Length: 255
Image 1: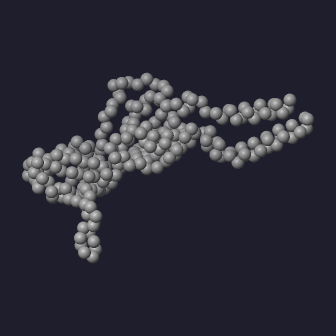
Image 2: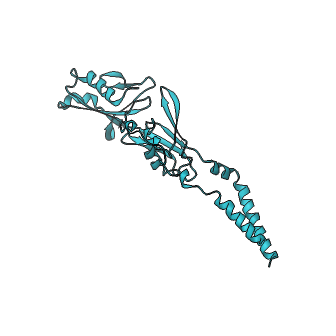
Image 3: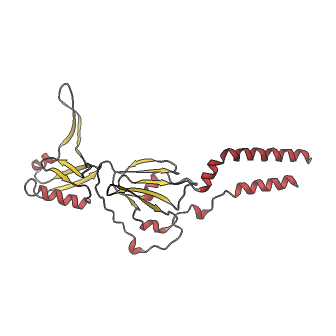
């Protein structure tokens, strides 16, 4: 009888730590106001963005000074090494780039549309007539770390990534990841701003950080069970060993 009671108690201790579906299933509650759901995403250029800027026009010769190739030269022969690559322009701490012919241009803080308009005004009609301009962030990346399967920094080629996409790139949250209080750290006006996202709620879809911006950091906390488990791991091992020993002794004594 004692053996049975100890066994039942041990099974209760094991099953009591199980996680219920309501603790891990995404988008369980809260109605969504469809008027607030938007697929609009706007890139805002920031310091340390590395931009690829391509200028094209019917007059190819007129665009050549604005599409300089990035090449490496030999220190001995002075000849170019390898294949030329697209020139990139780093936005400095003042929000400026140094662009061929035009000189300093302040693109930091501008949206893509505003930056395109600025370049068109500078180029046309004095340098290039009816220019077609493409701007791409070459180093657009987000970081996901904490209680996920594959934490790391991920380069995003198309500059559009939602918090769900980023979590997917990191292999999803571990079962012990805290889904109702995911932290997003973003730099705004040279300050670090923190946002909290509840992945259990449908309101995630209308969050201001649903679409991530370049250099955003997503952090997933461990839930209480994981923290307690980590802190008492050695004690748990000891308890299991002692429990097994007691069950063995009781079994011997009650034969």
